[in-house]
Image (cartoon, rainbow, N blue to C red; front, top):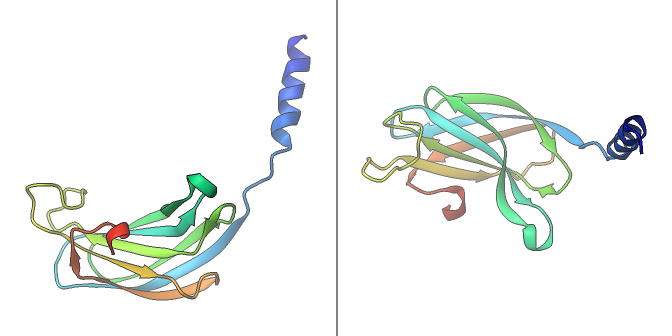
Length: 138
């Protein structure tokens, strides 16, 4: 097969893939904490994948805040194999950009299940009050 025919076959094969369907969501709210330091928010699908490949808490997007404060983030949420939405936050009190590394002081975290999802505008409050937990432990 000549090179042009091979390229045409490959182009036609890839051209037939279904595009990702995205759902736009604006999430706004407040992060509260008794501690100080930057906060990282993770916007998550609660479930992702199918059958034996299903996993909990797949990251859709992230956002860094200078401190616990109000926020607003517009997300393009893939609709293929993910369901539900949660927001996880943790406070980087020592500003090393790593959550609860061994030998460092505990850093606060929190998780909120977004009950109003799917909706184009969602308001939530995230409270960071649990030391050194990932989303799976909250």
